[in-house]
Image 1: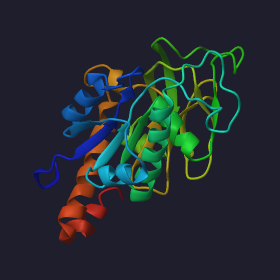
Image 2 (image 1 turned 120 degrees about the vertical axis):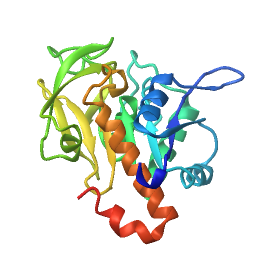
Image 3 (image 1 turned 30 degrees about the vertical axis):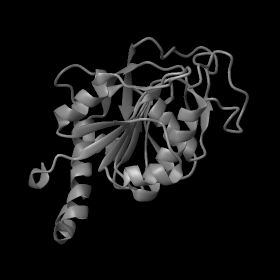
Length: 253
């Protein structure tokens, strides 16, 4: 790790409903970050835009974790599918503010499953609401199904994983249908579904539709978390030790 830094990386949690809502997060996300050299920090979906920005100014990176579904009607898009299990509105609103602020701050960030879809929607993209119904004749992606994904070897993600193809664990029935401003597809399955996106405009902004934290021990997918931690550590060094900015800034090149 750069200069002994262990970067602080925020992870958005799920919001439990009811009279006394709380934040929950499966340990596997935090464990993957800890193993990669980061310090995980779970954040609750509370506060307004200014609170979100102040929070993100104090961390070095962000993971947008998996979760349930989007209330597309609330977003002013198409009616929400009957099979959808929308996250609480407070969480959905918070998550949009979280990603908008992270993009403005150019915070290194990784989106997983729901998190990747969140990146796409914030950019103005579209969503398949229920697979395989929305893509008749194609495979289902829920329940932990294993399948292959092909990566663009010229992409940032392809260079990070050092692979052209990877077997992944899928646990979703919603998926990115089309991308808006600031994002490009960098991986697909063999049926053409977008499986990963990245922003060419930012130092590290990657979304994957699968669950790399569920990959087998020692999987090449560990490189994704290590790359995020390295990018976060580099940012921390640039902020805390400006005299090293030129050296660290060349690391991605």
